Image 1 (cartoon, rainbow, N blue to C red):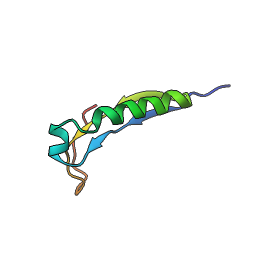
Image 2 (tube, rainbow, N blue to C red):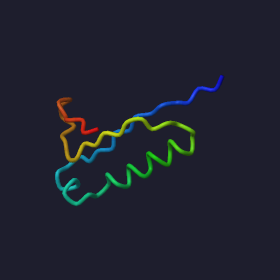
Image 3 (cartoon, one colour):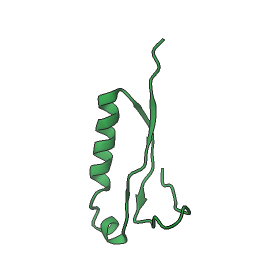
Length: 63
């Protein structure tokens, strides 16, 4: 029996400035999708954190 791995991906930026200029979220998404495709993983969820603080765990998950 073959089992397909399932993956969730959580791209994020650290500062509001990065989020405003869309610095790395699109690139992170492309890299995550390529990583899953190359390894035969099914990408089932992608959440984005645009400029949230890493100082606490009360951050929104925008899936």
